[in-house]
Image (cartoon, rainbow, N blue to C red):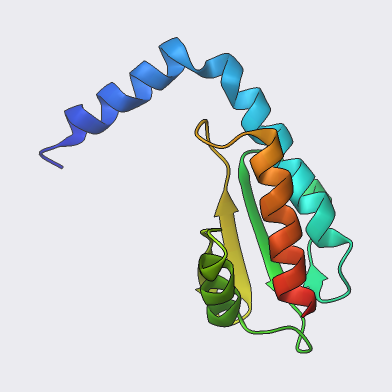
Length: 113
């Protein structure tokens, strides 16, 4: 961990300059999660979405994780497959609530086909 100081500096900057903004990121993640949870092809307990990170699982009827990632990327939405049927996304200060709403719709259409 020779570069831990650089990582620490980024964390300190975020705490000093973007702490209030984090609330927006959490709300954006919750909004995306709410849209996804309404799909019969998504398994997502909304109680688990308490930060800017959303992890959801795909039912056997849904496309698998890598397919969701690839199809979402084609539509400019970047998510990560944690496993064959698990997908993770993170909201951050560079995406607005409107962009998150659009991303949620795209993800829902990718999952629902």
